Length: 213
Figure 1 (cartoon, rainbow, N blue to C red):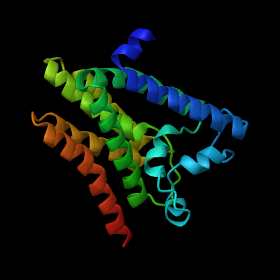
Figure 2 (tube, one colour):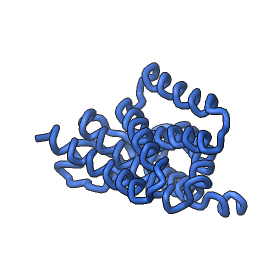
Figure 3 (cartoon, rainbow, N blue to C red):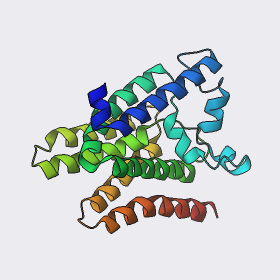
């Protein structure tokens, strides 16, 4: 674990935060399989259109990415985050990794609000989809075989369309965010990196306000 923290501290901290928050929500709900309806923390952190507008839960397009519905949802997402996040963080560095992660999570959250306003949503899947796309760029920069990360993305996209109960626009939002962020961070100029990282959630917010209008 010390070695993991040295090479990917942000990944470990984000994973730990998700686990701790889920444990609090599970304790409130008195359930390991359904924390959605019985936890005040979940209700305050999940992204849901009416709460975002009426109750002014302005933080939820980010906070939703740190909450999970049940122990299975948490386990799968944290396993993926530990594996993929470590590689992406080691490649881009901790500061850039955190910025990429937050940008993808917020952009996905805003897309959910735009296109799936009435669906309460929680989970790190949107950010994870972006990390999967960024993993392709990591492999490409190393001259490694791209088949494994590409298959990973394709399998998860197919899973999104075939499985009920997942956030279609959360997953696709993360996928689109990952593509845009990868195009930006593959450029040599740090200015382009940050234009993409900051500009993406800003554009997603204007899309939300434009559609809402």
